[in-house]
Length: 133
Length: 151
Image (tube, rainbow over all chains, first blue to last red; front, side, top):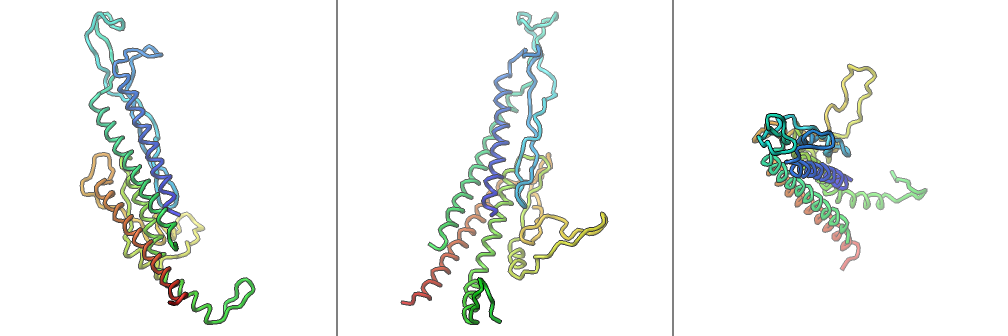
């Protein structure tokens, strides 16, 4: 029954969007992390979505990869900073807060859309059960 | 010719009656199945609104329903015994009807053609029509009961 498959499709969409929101949270939380376990500044991450066949005609979503953002790091002149180099410059993460906020809003709206789709399918299935009553 | 099921032979009238009731429901039942399949397609479109290069898909409901009722679209797949043989069904299909790509109104840079306004509208529209079919079937079921019970 294809209506049941909508739960899988929307569920995969919700999982993917929440993973995207997770990455946004990680990026925003680490926007000022000048060093990490490897001694390097935090590098922003982005998710890559791809389709995944679900059922006969439906296609769900999955996070194919979480890739590192290769845009240039932010360099700030701050000689007092413990991570500053000889010239007094500190390399800070390449997190763009504006991009991340936009990503966050987009992920949240897409998540909501999937929730709505799931609720509609649920009510349709419940109504289907009332046939003959 | 009387049909035989469960080792019991039915009279001609009995077969005709049940097949007539079956025929009463067939249209709405087919419509309901198609609506459910279309709902799944639109749910895929909404779930993949952020997937790069995803192309929004849909079916032509009217022709799909006509085809499904006429039974002309239920074709057996051809056997392909060599790599250059034609495949019986090249693209995807829903109950025999071809799945088509939506023409984007505002193409986006990442190659995704999902327009959320269109998809949400179509989803709501399809859900409402599904519900209508459910009610029609219920109504028909009551009609049959009324006819059986009399006044």
